[in-house]
Length: 356
Image: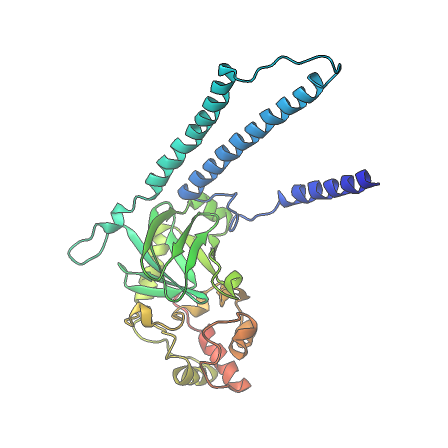
């Protein structure tokens, strides 16, 4: 009966393993690389896995051979003694060294190549770079993206061009976080004391397969809503990216509400929300003083609070009780209780904040 129970357990585990091999989406899985960095990391994963599987296979074969070939047949027979064999000593010393070199050489080479951020250090007289640079600031529990060359600040949705290197400065406002786009590469920590720098490249073909949208995550346990600290990455062609930049830079002042309800919502926003949320991309407030996500293009985004569907109903739910969706967030308790009518008007105003 014990063997039967163990057999069933093994069968269940095997079925689960087979099922899990089908998991993963183009926009989220690290096993479906969508850029040069992710491709390099994936190749190193395959190399290390092949080495480990090879070692396990050889050891298993030797183990089975020894069990069946050299099992005791006669108590009076003494097997050949091979201890102290110089050949065997050399063999099982040299082979691991060779395997380590096979793994170490490409790993070290890739590490130095991926760590080269020199293009983002070369600045002209105006302090701008030829390379596209994004300052990523992580907060509890949202992300801010600043494009210093373009003088644009936005949040939650990162927009990048495909088929070229995008350089990142990583910083945190409160506790340690970690910036990770599984399908494209990473991860790297966001510290409060210093900046980490690295680059990613987004493949156009892979972006098309993922409908130009990738998911980003916080990969460092940062609090009760760590698992909900998501962001989205819109990977578009260079021409589309330039159009987006022009659209954002064209917003010089807060968008004017068009309907009566939206105008009422704008008034509510100005009385309750504007102290923490900017609605223009040229945010002149120092980064460390920004309390909430920039909402300039809120109506164009793909998620509310990074995790909820982008519609008015979910927006109203978030405004009414953000603690229910992201425990420990910094928005809870920062504004007076609003009536249902005020929340309806505010939601209509926010959904109308578009730049495209």
